[in-house]
Image (cartoon, rainbow over all chains, first blue to last red; front, top):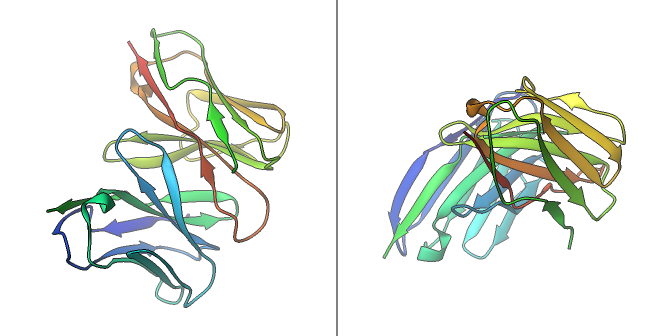
Length: 109
Length: 113
């Protein structure tokens, strides 16, 4: 059974700083996803990572995947307030998507 | 853009009622899913379906059933609603094939009183 763990669960950072959210998973995962959720809203897809060494970037966010270490990271560069949200990683086993607990990110001015 | 539409944004139901949550997607996706989201517990898979009339249990199916009579529609049924089913319910769909993401609906916040 696939288990996905994120850390940290809460992250408070200042604007302009860099930080990384970590996502570990327990068994082989076909794909690794990152989602963003704003309060009271649904999930917005950020990245889909398919293979070892995959790296994807969108604006100030960059996601990477190391399948050997069963680790994905979401790196935030020069954070801005608009990035405040909860970020989820999720892995797949077949069609089943298993989520981590989520990281609640607050970016302070 | 793919749209996944959940029929109700907010619902309040009484204990013991039979509750139907509807989800419709407009892009001919084979796979559809129901999750519930609770603070501190994240998102948990209730049921999923990979084809019409096909369904599989997720991690927390107890107290729920599903129906998929047409490809575009996946219904979640609470046979006899209980207060511990108060939650945010999210529907998602996905086509077959690697590299495709899951598209989520806007969610239904269900309160059982």
